[in-house]
Each structure stands twice: as C-alpha cells, then as structure tokens.
Amino acid sequence: MARNELQTELLKAVKALKGQVVNHDSLSAGIEWKKARRAAVKPVKEDRKTIKTKEELLKDVCQNMADCHLCPLGKTRKNLVFGDGNPDAKIVFVGEAPGADEDEQGLPFVGRAGQLLTDIIVKGMQLQRKDVYICNILKCRPPNNRNPLPDEISKCEPFLKKQLQIISPKIICALGTFAAKTLLNSDIPISALRGRFHLYEGIKLMPTYHPAYLLRNPSAKRPVWEDVQMIMKEINL
Ligand code: URA
Image 1 (cartoon, protein in one colour):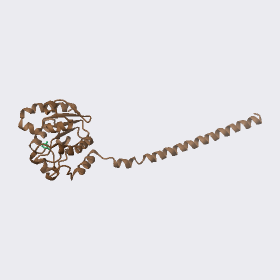
Image 2: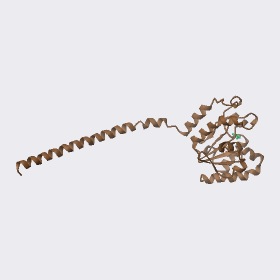
Image 3: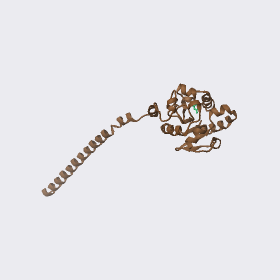
Image 4: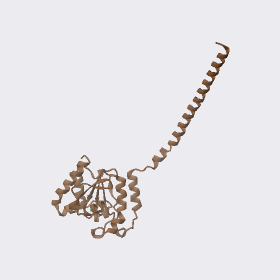
C-alpha cells in the first residue's frame, strides 16, 4: 500500500473511532437521562401516601358533617347516622331517615324495619350486612319520624352524593318513596318506579318498597323479592 493511501486509511480509522467515542458519550448521556427520569418518577412513593382508601374518604366526609347544623335536625338528633357497611360494596341500600333506634345507636336500619332489611340481605341474598353498605337520605332523625322536609333533603343530599361517589357501587337499591324520588329527581310514585332499573349518575338504581311499608303490608313482600332477585342477577349472586 502506498504511503498516501496508508495515511488516508489511518485518517478514516481515526475518524471512525472518534465517531464511536461520540456515540458512546451520547449512550452514557442516555443512561444518565434514564437515571434522572427514574429519580423524577420516584416521588410516586410519596404520592401513594396521599392516595386515600374508600374507607378513609368516607371517614373524611363523616368527620366533615359530624357537627352539621345545616338544618334544624342538627338540634334534635342524639346521633348523626352517617352509614354503615363495606366501603367497597357492590350494592348500597339507601333508606329515608333514621328512626328512634338508629338515632340512639348512630347506626342505620337497626330497628324493626332494619331487622326486615337484614333478613332480605342475609336470608334472601345470602350476604352479610358487612358485605353491603347501608345509609339514608337524611342523616338525622326527623322528630316523631315525620316525613323529611324538602329543605332537610336539599341540605343533606350533597353528603349522600359524595358517599355514593366514593363507594361507586354496581347497584343502588332505593328503599321507599323518599329515597327513590330524591335520587331519581322524580315525582312518579314508587309503585310505578319499582320493578326495573333506572340510572343514578351512571349507576343502576332499583327502587323498591321500604321495609317499614312491608311491615304494614306483607303482601308487598313478593314484589320486593322480585326486585331483589333482579339485583342479585345483576351482581351475579
Ligand atoms: N328507616 C329508614 O329509612 N332508615 C333507617 O335507618 C331506619 C328506618
């Protein structure tokens, strides 16, 4: 090989080597960048700490309303009855308002109507109360169990809305006229609403008769059982 050719070949080889060095630098720069990116992603651990469970979120709502006096029932209640059960429940039962037993214990549906609801859940649906979530339209007892007033409903409803948003169940079962009419924003009687699913904020809602109504009208147990069976089918029970 002539000297000139040899020089040219050598130069080419040096240039190629330089190129490799440059490429190597950018490669290691890439590794550095990946490290930096990993470091930036690390705070996810911190973020996780701030992501609350449904149980914690419900507790927050409950604490926010613990001292609620937005309506006059705040003055007459013994206990606020927020709700009870599984925050991850597939089904939420929504009743009307606490009665005397519920006001006393601070828990929903623990009186006579509550026993009937428990039978529907345990004997009918083969579930436990702790598998479902139970709450009411009003969180405080109206004196002498009178019907909820429109102002009481409008003051209390945002808390229920938040509860349902957090739990985000597959099915809501609205127990009785007040629950059905409030959640569906409808004036249609419960007898015409029941027996089919409606939608509440994208969630399937089945209106049915209130357990207290069943105590007075045992013949209404059959349609309630039909409604409950439709719910069970929907959640694969
Ligand atoms: N009736 C209701 O609507 N809710 C209760 O918690 C008890 C009785």
